[in-house]
Length: 430
Image (tube, rainbow, N blue to C red; front, side, top):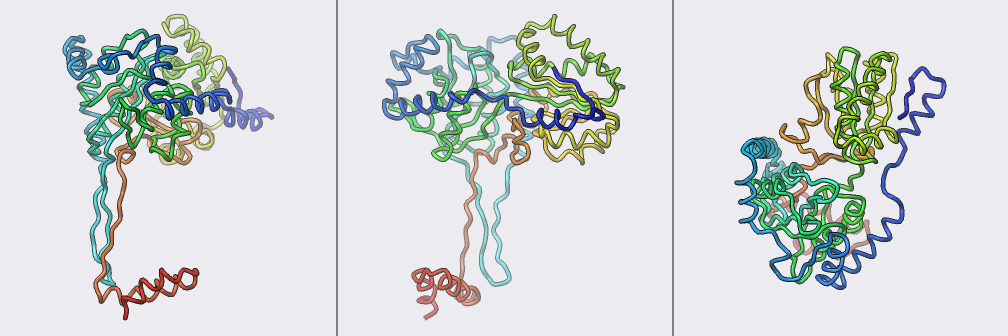
């Protein structure tokens, strides 16, 4: 774990190294993924069978072996503990309400020249949702991906998820029931992403692929972008906590570890203006690591990628540092979080005040938890209904409006050396 202060003579050098550090997968992943994609594209179901047997120890033999039925998902929903069922329902209702407010409006108007202009928003026909099933299975991620797609109006929702040794997570199946998923296929990894993009004899292709996964899944989405739409190329999770010394150090330690426990390559950073408080947080992290069932992973993440930065003036210095980090999650655990909010330009999602831990946003708050990582918040946003929709513009002219703007189009066409373009306008003028 790194610890340094803005007053250190080498601070800028060390901070720049922190900002630019890459925690993504090894470079040879790209070559391996390319081979997997090619195999699925050329051999379809046969390739899926081989990879599923090799990586998941599961045989895709008969038709029934490939899928998990809607009835099985409903059964899982009915048999989980009532408290879990209520939590899933609450999360789903809040996620749905938040994303309903994101639906864009169509436009249709006539301008001063008499030209009719507008745009229509339409959902894609089919969306593929990747749900991890390896290190951890996340029903919350299924809700966060499937519900915006449904709200957007997508008619066919397809889930792919690995089922090691044939085992599936009942909570994931329950979440699929709550979200109204149409198909669940027992395939995972880059090969599952390839099946969604190319289609096979068994799995029909989709238009958009979203959802988190390991380095191979992320690389597969990157290579297939263009053939299908994707949400983003996501890297390891990260959190930045900006906290003053008035916080409970146990709370802040838990917030930092909430991301560290995801993966050894995750990153947790604390910025504070109180060195004594920072030391308390360090002590609390050590205590909590010894108590966490995920302590081994979290410890590896914290020691390899964690950082504590001591600033002289939290209000003046922290926003600038946060913007350079452009973190996935940013907590503002300070008195006047609202004032600092206006100064944070680059962040996947911002959590305001001492009583807003990032973990609430992961599950039940409503905003999507699929967010840009690796400083991509500088130019991209979290998952939304717009990732499952596309905009089609339209225009219409009558004789009067055509005479007003048509000649300028012909003039520009001639200037660009495109006489057929110009002629299509000029013939109508005659």
